Image (cartoon, rainbow, N blue to C red; front, side):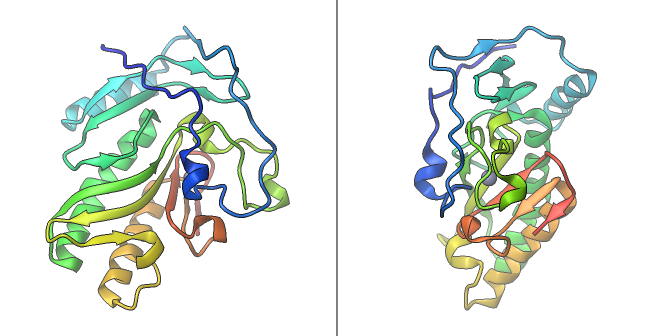
Length: 225
Ligand SMILES: [Zn+2]
């Protein structure tokens, strides 16, 4: 298996775009170890091995990533870098395998068919604000204050938009409350499907921090908002 070392030292893109961090209060800072990540050499659990097999069987091209402890509680195990799931996806870094498997199925069997059926055009790109980011949860109130985001374990992806073959670009930010009923129905359909597949789904209806993306994770749940 080929290993890809594709980690930026500190991924702040989610802060730039809003991510989970958009409005105050800001989280207690969670910092990666300045000296860099430590590679872990534990055994690969059977469920993770099965997940790798499932990805390969589904004709997904990916690279396995080493298990790593980045410090600050940010530990990533059983992760992959998706290379080709059939539809180009921007912004993906490391994802835990179960997240990658669920995301791939959602794009293929929910997003792509909905684009064709509801908007009458082929899905040609999915845009994201990324996956792994060592940070705490923001905007969730006292219950989540100081808790590590699922992004810190590469167990979450923030999806921001969809591009169709006819040139349309449907973003969560502009499309969620669009005046066009088909656009709204397309995004609601994707949201409903995501809630059946992922453990936690957060939309612009959840809080102001999610005004411009769908947060999809495989942590605790089910929680659909
Ligand atoms: Zn998120």
